[in-house]
Image (cartoon, rainbow, N blue to C red; front, side, top):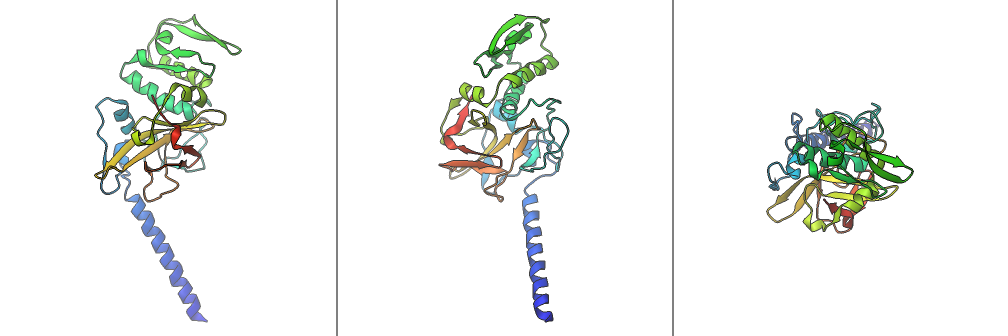
Length: 275
């Protein structure tokens, strides 16, 4: 009777060793000391990151700062997200209100980039009721008066262009914009033309949005990309795992014709949009 137990022991030992080996192999693709997206994640063999212009939106996203390896995603109230659908956490303060959800995280990244580049005239987002809230108005001291579903500008503050005022502007946009308004503001494009900064988005309630934050390509023209998201309730922006391919994760193959499965939402490829 000892032999079956011994066989079972060695079988279990083999399974444990194989699991540990696989985990070590997966971890070896991650540079734990990397503090930016492009230095944290290594590329699959044969791939090279696609070239991007310096100071472009794509360049900004590729160099997003990340929290230390192993950091957990926190909700706006400090609680930890238990569903670990991510491989990294973007190091960006989201405040203490339930505001920066999925579409808001996309808006935040776009707005932060334009603000850093001092391209203030290009900062403008549309609310769910169709009202356009441009940052130049906000800079001049105008604020949006909301009465029911009606909105209008009123000059109630002193002109200011501090980062603190910019964040107040974004928080207001987060409160009254969402996937529906963002989806209508963006332009559809083919998955074959996917680029960093593009957004997979389903407008509505419920709806969701994720943004392409990096891309790579091999010599045969095969493309892979990386995605970031926030979710509900408001939570830190996270770099998503690939639920369909653990060996490729966090990269996704662009060779898809039907559905794009992300950990918390399934998109159609025709739901890809750009600015």
